[in-house]
Image (cartoon, rainbow, N blue to C red; front, side):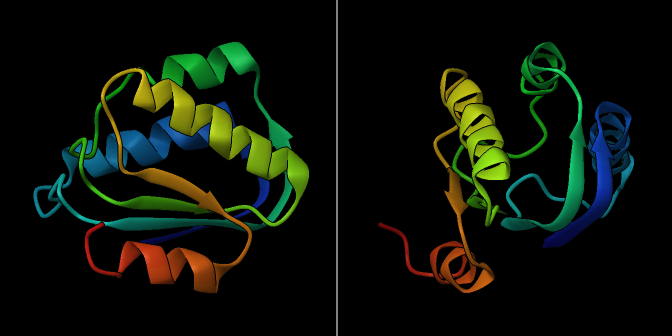
Length: 111
């Protein structure tokens, strides 16, 4: 699965995406996902909103999920989300600087 985000990213956008996945009868929580934040121009949500968003289980804990975040602000946000999910037992999230690195990990063999 590839999710591409662009422009201003808000908390509402994240909630809408989460709800869309959860209500889609074709969605399988074991899917692997790459979320590409390369084209995001503004992060418009608080740390508290991010913590709240991380409380929801959408993917299985072992599902490989990669965030592509080329700049420091987006990379840090991705790491924060990954650490919050790790505290809930989700061990399949990594953050990468390039799409190629993310693809190699998401579609690679299990470690």
